[in-house]
Length: 182
Image 1 (cartoon, one colour):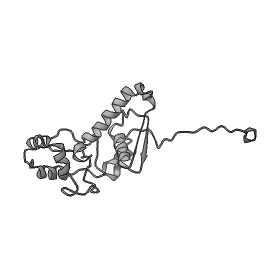
Image 2: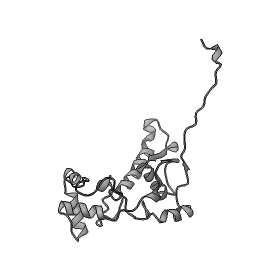
Image 3: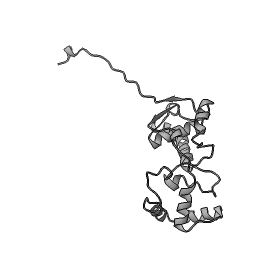
Image 4: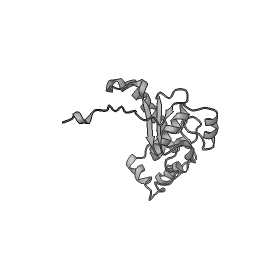
């Protein structure tokens, strides 16, 4: 999501919009799933790779009200993720001419930059490689994202949503006598 989901400007009171948006999407699903034939009491949140990390982060961010009943996490966990050090924001602000010691002004300036211009500005050729782990990391806010070293302590203290993880559907097979088949 890069800067569009994780602007993490010093001028923002709340960080990690991308993670907060995921929560809003899950709330919307809970409130509307019946309209699509679903059951809000049987929702499962799953993800693979970065999506799996998001699911793990979600378990720590909303330990008392996860909304969902189970998690599926494939190939990724929050302990593997480093926090954003702010370098992505600073680099983008420099590239767009918005860099300022006044964080409120800097943020307002960045909001006025055309999204296409900002996307080109953030291309790997101008900022850093997409494989760079700092490209779109959440920032430590101790609400939606904790420092890497905090997760073992949170886990040991039981401060995460205690739900079934890695749940898979059960299949029922009925045996038939193949000799009676034509």
